Amino acid sequence: MLEILASTAGRKVYLTTKSDMVTRDIDLWLAVSKKNEVSISMTVTTTDHVMARLLEPYAPRPDLRLAAVRSLREARLRVGVIASPVLPLITDSEENLEAVAKAGAAAGAVSFSAHVLFLKPCSQRVFFPFLEEQFPHLAARYRANYEHDAYLRGSYPARIRKLVQEIRERTGLAPRDVAELPPPPAELEQMRLF
Image 1 (cartoon, rainbow, N blue to C red):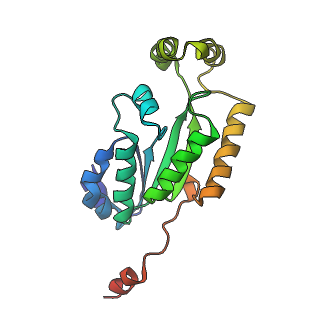
Image 2 (image 1 turned 90 degrees about the vertical axis):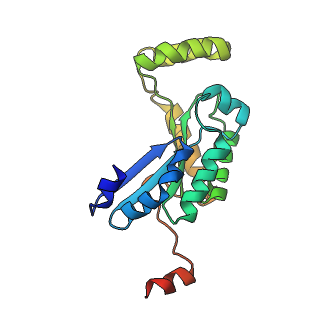
């Protein structure tokens, strides 16, 4: 697919992934980016390794994902970090979200965003039993808030959006949709003249 995209021009190509394997295709991503707008987002729910293993047992560790962010950025690709899903009362603390943003910025990310968990009925069938086992004190609250609607509405998502914006301002990261690459170092600009 990337080879096909590399033969096209004028497209906006976005990838969101949890996989650090995205780095194996850096050359193809660079080829695609020559004639298209490319943006890659790495999902990092938490930098806490223990919590990450519990929440995402089959996904690469957070440090591996952040290393991938660094590799993509070093290749001059536009890359951001998404702290998603934000799990109410589990990963929604300011400390957790800011840790993800700071780790992303340190790895070279140009953007940061986060999205509150949504639970469609098919996901609820798996997630509710997980909560009962791992976070039994939260299970009833989750059921009450998600049983009749896959999305949370009202003040909670608004509070998370405001918090994410404050974290962006503190870390110097842009929202995902407007993240631009900073200008390249002078030596790269000079090389482009030839």
